[in-house]
Length: 77
Image (cartoon, rainbow, N blue to C red):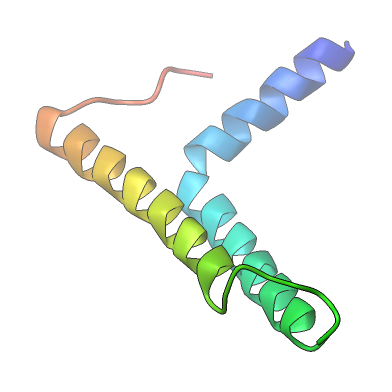
């Protein structure tokens, strides 16, 4: 029941990984902008959060390119 719902949501996220990562990117940019507006917070540096997000995007893009090149397909539902 609940486990099946979690698995279904996980499959949806995997099939729409680029859309999901785009949403995470928007959230990361908004969070970083919000945190930069608070001078009393000591952050590691401007852009670090977006660099981490950029790395995640690169990993997903590389996987998608390899999957396309080798003809890998997602498992059926």
